[in-house]
Length: 407
Image 1 (cartoon, rainbow, N blue to C red):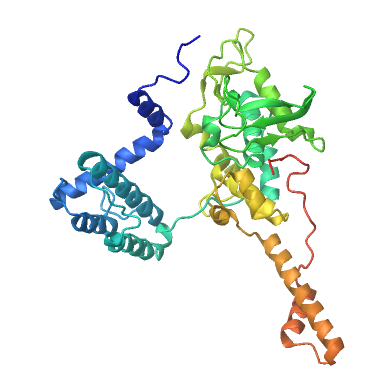
Image 2 (cartoon, rainbow, N blue to C red; image 1 turned 120 degrees about the vertical axis):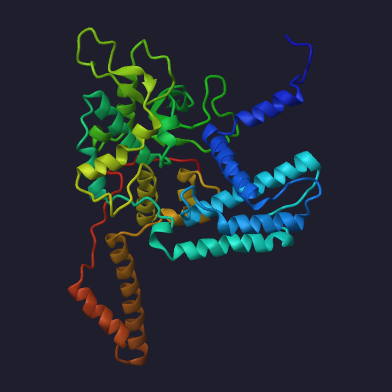
């Protein structure tokens, strides 16, 4: 046992630990953006030293915000402009504090208001061009989602993984790239207070062998629950089947593995190779399935993130409130889920019907008290209702209860 009550980690070790929690793709993105900014400043003959005033830095960021371009000279998409400017401003802020002890805040200080306005003006100009607007991944209708599930054969390595990904990706509202980094350590079978299994599997991306969340988790858990209505798409069953197909030669913790082409051979080591599925390969799964069932992926943006958008939109359609929705998405506030709330035709009809029903009820109430004729708006609504689909049959989003989350 150590003679020291407290840890003995050095400042360098602490800094290294802080650095290590930043994902590699984030580091690469930051470095790439800074290299482009340095090239821009080199062409403009801008110099950064302790004598450069904050007014000059504000001018540089103003110039950069409006004039950044791709290598081929074309404009970025409007959302990229915001990301690149924000990342650059943050790195410039860190550089001047660490190297020269100079403090400023490009995101708040009045001196940098023109810089922020130049960034926003550039974005507004680009939003006029459809090809430069940010477009969210389209949602799948329930019919499209169910048709996609039917193309997978769970008795093959590829089909089993894609089927589980499709079910879990929806029910856990995974981000587009989340499945790539999922490991078996992120899942654990839940037990009740008596130690008996509940039949649910808890998912939390901070689980590890030594620390399974602790008393105060950094992120809320989500659960996969048994689907008794349709066992074919039961996420618990599919997950356990995937684990049963991991041979003894598998040493990686990653959940989704590269299928073994020779899995049918008697001498084969098993269904999967000892290597994870590549990011680019996995990124095609939802789009490929959509194309296979006849969705025009040139007109409709389909990606793995579509499963997340579908989950949020369908839950909202079923009446789940925004405060509950962010429990499953993991967002910090309800404003972040606005882009996911995409309305389909059925949802729009349902809302219009409620509006018409409320208007009719109010008008009838007024008629009883005033004996006035119905207004033209209400009469028109009644006429439309008689010629338009007015009642949509409620559809159970998941076909069963499959998501539970902390209140």
